[in-house]
Image 1 (tube, rainbow, N blue to C red):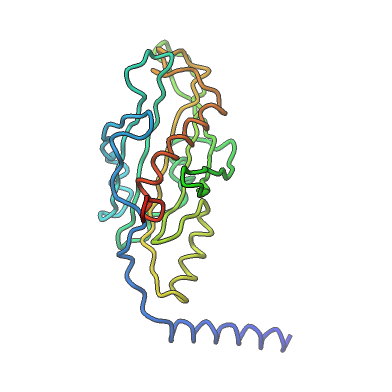
Image 2: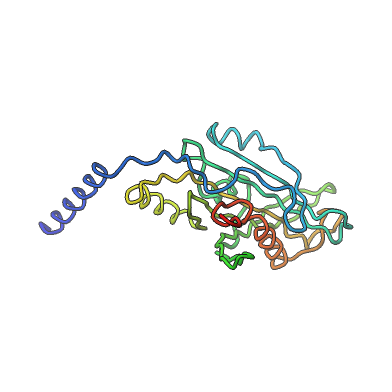
Length: 237
């Protein structure tokens, strides 16, 4: 019992010393990605989307939100794809960045599966992202109810790091604040697309895709977007 108390006291003392003598953090001014989305990404063309009033009210005022709706243009509905992409970049208030699962639950989505996936970029680098399979019930015009399925894929970007894990993001923040004198200004890109194989093209405005095809489409879009967004992944960066 005495030994356990001594160890606890020693750990507390070390924590105090680290806080006392660690250098002042940089203030989180350096962003690890560009705060814009390109108009063209691979086969997709994107139209700007405004942030919703709910997003603006829930997030701190200095949060940067950039959104685009991407479509494959000039094709019949039976061959068209659609995805929604957003960037959320923290300001001085760290509450801007959090687990997206919390917001999805608040919007009525239920998460049915979660896994980490790898995106092999044209440079050969591997980008790890988090894929959430989600579902919620929607009411059609004829009064029938239908399960709407989708995939929500995201990752976190710091000053010079990225991770698909919110826990790892927090550990990186703690480590780099103490040992590297870096206070990351975190951001997270996300891509969301519906699974449409239970909808007609007239209902969805898209081609019929199952889960596997939808994830494949999202990862291909990320492969085109990531080098444009993340400074460390940009050509000649």
